[in-house]
Image (tube, rainbow, N blue to C red; front, side):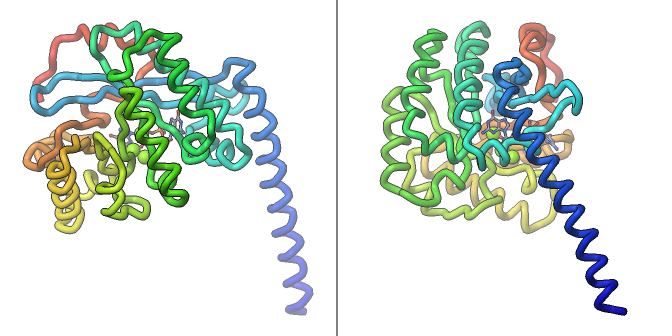
Length: 275
Ligand code: C2E
Ligand code: MG
Ligand code: MG
Ligand code: MG
């Protein structure tokens, strides 16, 4: 009896798996067509400089407008695109589009672009970055590339070469989501980052441990000459806490949600809110 029930459960489980695989397969087919069908957009989240409370630029965040599923969040499709390699083509589109759109912003505004581990390791990355800058006439100092610890894991020599080559182009590199992955402190010394972005989990929770981690990372980054961004600042109270730490920048819903490109000029022209 138990055995039969077990088998029954197994069949149910199998059907569930089938369903999942089917959905995944469908998503993959749709993702392959998404570029050609122009279903991607970039939204932009403001980056605030804490030394003078001004917006110095925006982070580009990818949006997929699926005709049936609606807005698919990046966390739901970027991992898949990374597994099947589509991220390289999608990432090229992101770099080209972000540079083109940023070139129309008021003088000096920077744009930060996320580059996934596979895209970072693709041998076309340097060429893609150089050509995105050239075609948009955006000066390299206005581009920041954000990578996560996943990009640094193996092949240290090649990673270092790529980072140096990007720096030679004049592009800045940020370590994104610091604190959530392997967070080896030696990465900070080994690789030429200009900025560390401390993950929002350390900003959101107001307990002694996350405060200590935030303080330590900000202190270390500062002594290594890096800028420090606190990610995911949602409340005035969190902002006040961050101001007491050695953070140089903040991003979060409090200072601005990601917005469509056509909203940027009015956002920049608005009267400065008191913070
Ligand atoms: P990320 O690079 O760390 O980007 C920050 C994420 O936090 C964004 O989510 C942003 O909308 C969200 N966020 C910003 N402020 C707040 C806040 O105050 N509270 C909360 N709860 N969330 C906040 P999003 O747009 O869903 O992107 C998620 C992740 O997907 C990004 O994390 C990044 O790793 C990846 N991603 C987004 N666009 C791209 C892209 O063009 N290429 C690649 N490779 N990855 C991308
Ligand atoms: Mg990012
Ligand atoms: Mg981040
Ligand atoms: Mg993140």
